[in-house]
Length: 480
Image: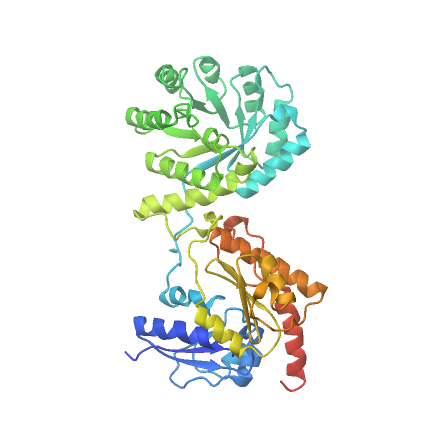
């Protein structure tokens, strides 16, 4: 078979970095390539229609690779080239993975078999409107059942109205109480699961006509569990067992062992784990804790988890559990590590950093002809690059001083600052703040883009590119 020939389209500023990356990847993967440097400084400003008027595609090209920021109808370009067209990654440092097909999740990824039960704590103290609002949010985040959490010292006279209102919203509901005076009306109103049943209320459970969660009378010894299971099984009451997870310092390791023991005693019984005792009571961001606990559940065959999201560091637990249950299911089913499959769970630091070499930054400073500032976060420092300018410092404030006052602090730079009105200064400060955050945490920084916070990312509008596109369109309309 003939060798693959990739034809890369880029602008003048990205040529050096692109050539360095592609040369290395081509040698490793064994393909031929050509790089088409079009008459534009910033590749992100290209449109397919504009590229169609300037491209000089190699006759042997088997694929055309466009810059990652290139958007729009490809039809004008497809009309003038004889090879498939593909848009590359936004960061050219990601080209090796992109060209190697790495980082793509298997088509079957996303399946799961763990049910999420999300508890609304202290429901009797809240208005019905607040409960419904919370319930809808929890369901949108991935909760399968909404658990109505009751308070000790009941009964709560409004429990039936609450359950009915949630059911009227199309939500599945469970009731969290040991008091039959609350449970019975909740079940009649549509609750399909009761948390929880032990020797204190197991006789009444035979009349509820719904599934229940069985807990031991004494957590450390599992005393009472066997009797409750036998009674309910004889009455044909569907059940699942919760061995009760304990907080760290109060028997956490032993409580994990109890789940293993329950599975050993009852190989086929359905099980549930209440994971809030760890996420809510541990000074740690909850995503990693939730993922670890769901991994344990997946291996042991615990097919439902009860979670809360009351304390601030665990306020997105339902969303985390929804992502984690898919990750651990795939890992266990396919016997692969749960790695490089769910980047949305990696929030504090990025999975991988793609560095820009110092030589590339120097070449960039020499090639730039305009006074626009490019910002980078590399090797512990924030960098500003413009026409014949390259400043760097770990402190954005010092960097700004050097930019505003050439020679500040004995520095050798003698440039005069350009395009630094109040609006542009604000923009640079905002971007340098993001870059400094990326340096501190070990995250990838890309100018004019949101930092990647996984499932917490809030995308940003590209104000710099929007303004540049307007200017470029004006120039192109005047004859390019």
